[in-house]
Image 1 (cartoon, helix red, strand yellow):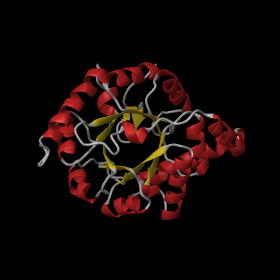
Image 2 (image 1 turned 135 degrees about the horizontal axis):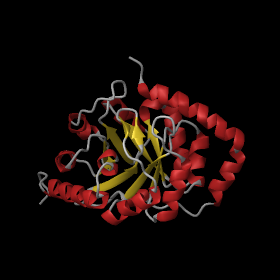
Image 3 (image 1 turned 180 degrees about the vertical axis):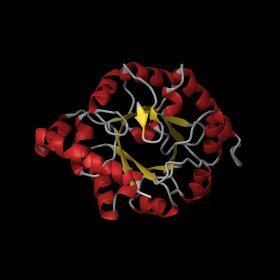
Amino acid sequence: MANVLDEIIDGVREDLAARERLLPAAEVQAAAAARPAALDAWAALGGGQPAGELRVIAEVKRQSPSKGALADIADPASLAARYAEGGASVISVLTEQRRFGGSLADFDAVRAAVGIPLLRKDFTVEEYQVHEARAHGADLVLLIVAALDDARLAGLLELTRSLGMEALVETHTEDEIDRAAAVDARIVGVNVRNLKTLDVDRGVFGRLADRLPDGAVAVAESGVRGPEDVAYYAAHGAGAILVGEALVTHGDPRARIQEFKRAGAAAIAARPGAH
């Protein structure tokens, strides 16, 4: 079976080449250097702080390869503002167009509307994209271990940090977690969606959580339908969740985030040794 990630990245590279023809790398690098300092996403996600609160990375997500169209988001800035009001620590904005219907225009609208850290959610495989993210005001980029060899992973993470940003380093297996740890990733996501079948198995997080590097912010990605899923992730060591579909399809995303945060805090408080 074809790897969906590989198919997506093929399209990402084509679209990237088109953008590079319009805006040369030197201009993007200059724009990145001219931006004000990035916000501290590590601290926003609880990095270095005692566990007690579950952080929420709330995603502006129009569609997905597994579900197709999710929501008609006419005003991403308004949605992001509701996320922030609900207590989101970081807002993720999809900018991949072919499979997710996102755009840098969506990102720019959200950046102008909120003052909390933003994750530029795309499939980062080239240095150009990291400079591009910073030029648009991103504080985090996504680095998917499965899409990068060790040298490229280390190089992109180093560049990201040199620009004042952080990376959500996404993993799916024990080996990928070890590779993330080897480059000193500080924010490590476990995506419980199978890259080949797109099936979701929340138990993947529970099985891999003990493998995550000490001191890293552990982010549970995919599979959040309701508070019970949030509680499961928090009970197994998640410091944050990344959630999109359950918010964009809900009538009151602000209240939904608050509900998720309560469920997470209760689960964290009930962890063995929490008291």
